[in-house]
Length: 163
Image (tube, rainbow, N blue to C red; front, side, top):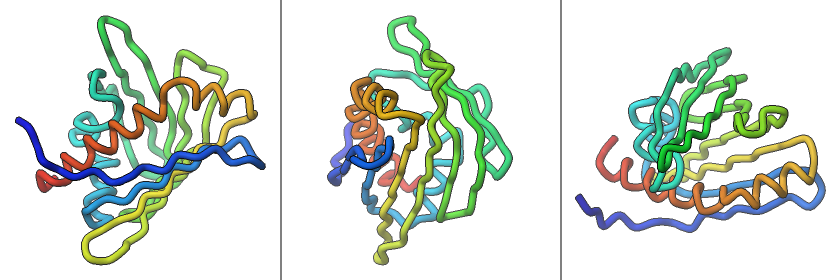
């Protein structure tokens, strides 16, 4: 099924002062729906990551003190990710750790803030802080920018379907 969902611009920038990546994106849906799409594993598998990957959730307990692990697969290759949820506030905030199991010594501290823009729109600001500029630059060079943009376009489609 094809969709005619319009897609907004995704801003992805590296901070010059600290090893941090900041992503800003607006969605044509209220914060409660955007939050649900980030916390409901049945919705998450429909949009998180690039289009050519399949996502399988091992567990996803998005609440303060919860944890997660999921796999992305492509052509028989598996990419595992895991982390824990430090703080989860409905419709407004998710603070979590993020580890790519292919680089198990690296961990990012991620903070997702949802801002109500009115008229059923939301601005998401996501920051990912890592332990060094080398790690941040490797993160950016990994193709994450394309994956983030494709994932948010897929999220637009999920939200447009009324999820």
